[in-house]
Length: 140
Image (cartoon, rainbow, N blue to C red):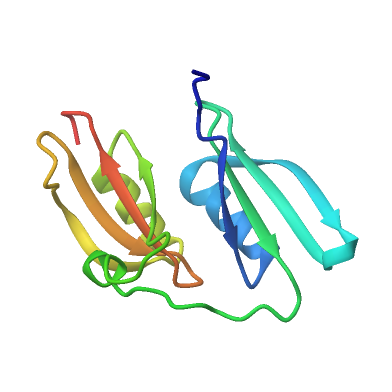
């Protein structure tokens, strides 16, 4: 059996450049490449985290409209499909304060996760997408 690895997650956004700047500033991504699919009038910016290689694909197509966005993790679990994206960070409290300072909306302050030994928080990015920030380390 071939082993699979998640390559990237795709997120459709209203403002491609603003979203790319925010995710780079908030979580340390850099622009890896930019693509255009003329047949769909679709623009793509692929972000990569140079430290650990995970990627986030931001997509924009003119005429797109916001879909349902959950206000919190409980509401997200009421809709089938992707409810949030999660980022594992070394210092949860510092990262939470940083992303809120960059324009994220506070949803759930840092606290113990239901998963033993993990702390978590939730924010919504500037476009309202739900983000979990978690720390698996013991120092945050």
